Length: 356
Image 1 (spheres, rainbow, N blue to C red):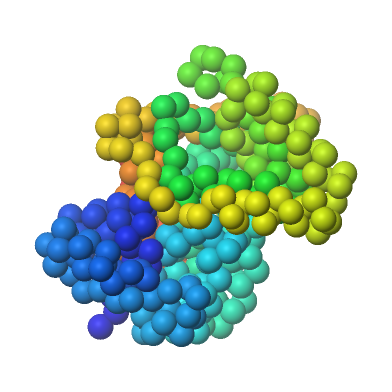
Image 2 (image 1 turned 60 degrees about the horizontal axis):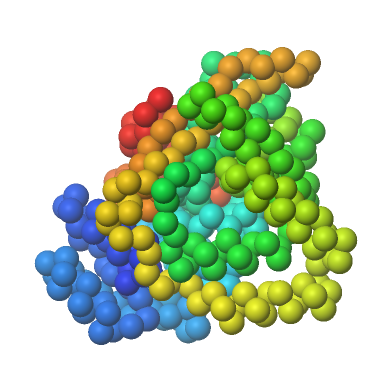
């Protein structure tokens, strides 16, 4: 009988996902590399099945899955550790969801689209705060503006803490090529190559460009779309500083000695999951996502703003909902899919619970 497997269940995000699943009546298999931590988590959740698996032993990850299962993986940084879970899902014929926010890994998942279609499974990457809200806001804005050819999406956070895994992921992608949709083509573009301002709750906010799933997904539901921008809100000085650093990195070139040294330093200092924000911090967190759409003459056609709370709580809720819906036969297609392609715009809007 098909089942939900949460891989990385003893990590910060994985535990939150497991808690939401169990609270909703699901009985996931909890998987991680530490059997003692797994046993404690299972006891804390009232008893559920566990399995030991480690990305350094890909066979142990493959052994988690049977055909028709749903794998939810939170094991990151994904550029370092994400491959075995993706490979295992495809090999087993299991549906796949992950929590990554790392643009280069998202693109890697979409490069497996043909393999997923052949296997008859859905690959749904970045199905959390990175990058469901932006996909949702943009899809809502584009639905009301069929003539739109450009969309700009900004993510803004207030009072949000970060986990060790998030910090490792953010640091790691600074040494990887980003990408963007420009003039109808997905092109290589440095992370932080662009800085832009958005109106957020009546205030002007600065964002720096990042590679998000929106570059790969939105044109598939809105074929007239030619250009997509995705931005992370930062103070103006910080945004310009990061942009300058990105230009220096680009001038040095990927793969050079400085680049290799930077990656090695990140791997030493950023160990992945090491805890995250306390519940009281998450309770005070606020997030906003803005999507602005434009026609071919650069005339603004409208915008959609969505507001929510803590991004970790949002990610856990969406992954749990996506896993349950997928287990019940919910994906509308197979292959590498964006949120709206996988489940439908109105369904994702209702599940997200964001205020518009």
